[in-house]
Picture (cartoon, rainbow, N blue to C red):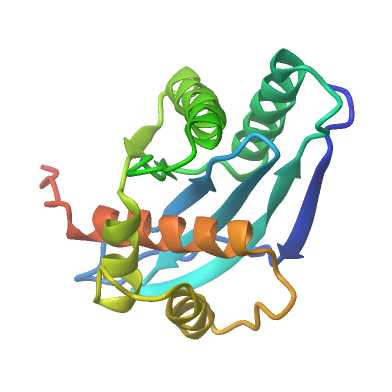
Length: 191
């Protein structure tokens, strides 16, 4: 695979995966994606023993001078690389809820379609929250402001996100929501 133009902003990798304590679900790793053609945010978060942990976050950036097909291929390759690197259990891809600018909506929709395709190619569980559902999961308020979401992401992950692109912070919020969704799913008893 050739070098893909994405910038990793934060990298915190675990040396091992902990075993779950009784009463907790198995550890889960979620990849959150804030789709966009020019900038596609990503965030990888783990939930282990009831604790959230940042694994990776950043943005896939493409050049405006390239064709739509080239840009979408780059996003596909970058997301595929992230899935192969981090091996998430599920992927959260923000649902396009409302967009005033039709051109922007089309570009976001195309990038969202690529993200859905990559997740499906890897057979991953896909969560498709609306922006309000992401805010609700992270802040407890579906009408929270962008700054409130960023502050809660920092608190929940116990990291500073100063200087981190909004797209990456939003993707981390999506990943956190996916981890919470996994924890809320009923457990299947094994015999």
